[in-house]
Length: 331
Image (tube, rainbow, N blue to C red; front, side):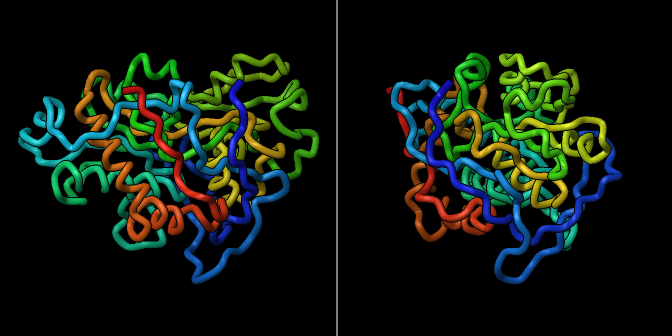
């Protein structure tokens, strides 16, 4: 297992409010988000709530390495720019609070969040227009199939880079660091984290997720048979009392704990270290290099780049961090 890097304790995630429990278990799940607050943070993530902050990547880890950035066009970018619809098609989430979601408290219901900001940066690089983009909401277990089938040009959806996924898709350099953690009701004092306290408990995870892969490696005696297409469906099952706990990315779970004050992250810190990356079709080297150029510029732009987006969407919950992951390149 990889070492942990740069963890920071959650200090509340914006205005905390109740989440609607009567949600349908579908990919089109709509969140009842907390109303916007003006200034400051309210509420608390509960004891043991931690998330991993961006940190340096390990040079010898294939999870953290990608192609060197370039602003040159190539066959993949040419095909995107010359098709009839002059827009970048991006697979995203529409239900992950602060990452990719629709805020019902705002008119228009446009997608917004940290991942959405990054997707718009890439669209501006390729088409010169941040609005030259089509968002396609896809469930967790359809991220790789959507890329391989050509339904989307890329996925910007809190997607962890790992060596197994690199067999099917190509990734940019990492743009955020996180890790897996257990989410459970605050009243469940007998669940203390990713350990033997899960014995006999029903644990939910998303199909095709790192969480499920990790659960299948361990033998805590937990019932891990409950899997769902979309990670947020696990939270609904937890709210309905159909499962005892959820395993998912701590950065996502922190937002869910903010939406529903009856749940919290268990354990002192994530038990894995992972980087989110932009996923693209295998062999689309020119597009990967162009996205890495965007990420390089995004990291350096102190006024309108990564830092501005982080401060707007995530700082209230994850606290102050030193910055995004440093890139590592393989050639």
